[in-house]
Length: 83
Image 1 (cartoon, rainbow, N blue to C red):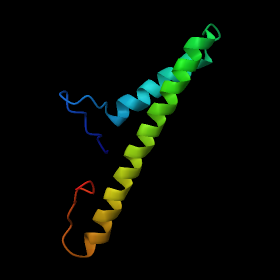
Image 2 (spheres, rainbow, N blue to C red; image 1 turned 90 degrees about the vertical axis):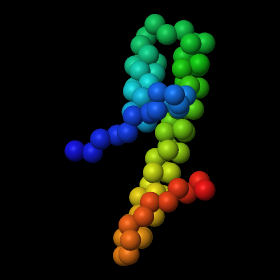
Image 3 (cartoon, rainbow, N blue to C red; image 1 turned 180 degrees about the horizontal axis):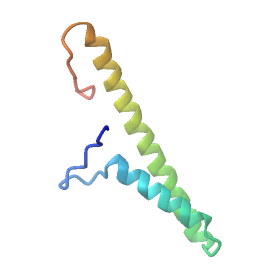
């Protein structure tokens, strides 16, 4: 079983699991019949922003995995792509 790393408590960036949980919560709230329009719009905007952030994190993780796989012929080495 693969475990997801938890976010550093000192960091203000939520973990991917936290982002996905918040997205699920937003969807549940938007599906509720008693949500006011202004609140629904604010939730929708937050959801779009969180979805974009989650997609970016997944894309970065995919690049790191591809980098490790490409180097598997020799030494397996994970490099920070941001550097």
